[in-house]
Image (cartoon, rainbow, N blue to C red; front, top):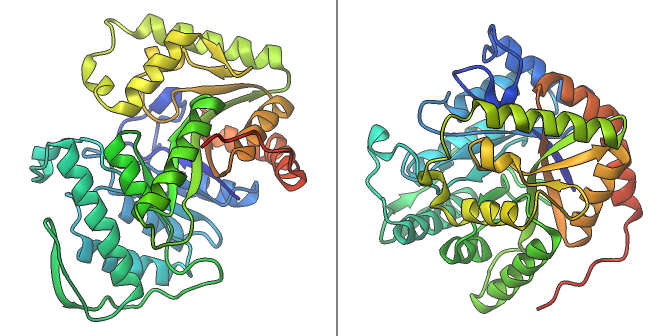
Length: 364
């Protein structure tokens, strides 16, 4: 099981309603987040990626140097990085941090022209991502690698320093997200962890079953695919307080929204799934709040689990019963919520996960 948080990696303050303003992305402030995570029981945090945001590898390196146990989950994009260059960079950071690096591969569209990428076709992007994952893994685990793919080629390549295998961890784990058929085929064959956004349990049960079938059908050569959940957790002392806060925040988001969300962010399969969830109802599976995604821009973290610490721990535990073992949680303001949820939610969640529960059926 992995319990991670989210550190805003933004040039502008106020991400998802965060209250931090002055020096919000200074090294001292980001270090304060990372050290708070260490103190309050979190293993690490996701650092988001995108053109116009601080470079994730640079930020992760700085934070690793100022912490002792914090594990950065670094989001990177094929097309922005070439695989051999990235494999060497990541191997170096993993070495310097004592094996604390995790990687999240992102294939969704970004400002491609701004950083010189040209791959606009989704099928080709995912084909390239599959080669990227395969080649990076080989460069971490093999020497004198020669690879001639459609998108990438290397000859006689050996990464130095070598990635040091650790118990249960032959190399930095490779997380990956995506809901399209092409994305699922990449995850089933080459990823270590498939990340889901906050959907209903029945929807994720279907996806887990499908990914397991695909892994068998496509001849997966790696250890079994694991699964993770990226979701916002609105935790208060009581359920009534949590829902009052959540509904007030969504009302404020709706008031600030001058026009309907443009269709661009809804073009991805995962985004469309979130819109369809909201059309099924504002609250699903007891406390999955779907309304924020209609007013806050969409994407990861735009469905919320709302309730007391006991209620949210129970909901997360039911996701774990499906086979989800990696959780990336967040709420704003980010820094105070690291402490609140570390104090109130994590002990209950760890106890729930340790105790286990009868698994919900996963058909397929």
